[in-house]
Image (tube, rainbow, N blue to C red):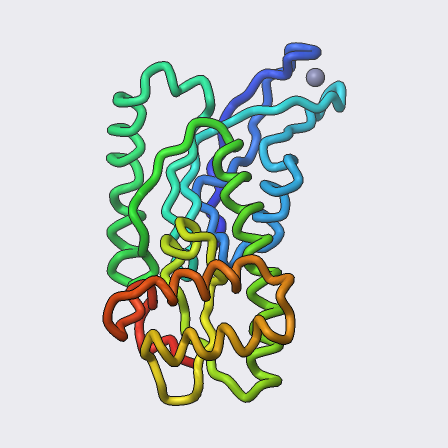
Amino acid sequence: MATKGVFRVECPHCGEAFDADFWTVVRGDRDHDVKELILSGEFDLLMCPKCEGMFPHEEPFLYLDPARDILAFVMPESYAAEKEKWIARMQADYEPVRASLAANHALSGTPVYFFGLGPLTELLESDRDREEETEVMEFMAREAGLCLLAVKPASARQLDLPFTLPIAKGLTGRAAALKAARELLAKNDALLRLKNLAAALADGGDDTVLFLKDEASAS
Ligand SMILES: [Zn+2]
C-alpha cells in the first residue's frame, strides 16, 4: 500500500520544473521493492525528464512495519533545524493515516522522528542482519524439534537478540527458553545474538521471559 504524492521539483542541472511522484507512506512489511530502494540509497533519487540528470530530492514520508514495531516519520535532513515545528506538522498531516491504521491494528511501536534517510537505513540494515541470524537459528530450532516465540522487536534491538527465541513445545518459561538456547549454542556457537539471548535469559529473576512479544505469536 505504498501511497504516492506528486510534488513540483526543479532540476538543479538544467532548471527544468516538473512533477515528480514521491512515496508518502511506505509499508516495510509489504512494499519490499520500496524497502530495497531505501537500503540501496536510490529511494530519493530523481531523473530530470529534460536533461536526464540524476539528483536527490527528499520529501517527508511515513515508514511503518507493524510486525517489527516500526512507526517512523522520516523528514528531509534540512528540517532538523526546525525540529519541533516539523514534528508537529507531520503529526497533524498523518493523523488520518495513523487513525485508520490504528483501527486496523496495523500500528505498533512508539513513533520515532528521523531527519534524513540515514537513521532509517541504519535501522533497516541492522534489522536485516538480525533477520538473517534469526533465520539460521530458526532452521536449527525446527531441526531440533523446538518451537519459536516472538521477541519484542524493541527488546531484540536493545539487547541485540534474535527476533524469536527457541523453546520446547508448549512451554513459555525462562528456564525452558534458556535450556533450548544452550542446546542450539552447543551445535553452533557462532550465533552471537543467540549467545546474547542465553546471557539475557540466564540473568536471574523469576521464570517469566520479559521480552516475549505475546503468547499468541507462538508457532
Ligand atoms: Zn534537468
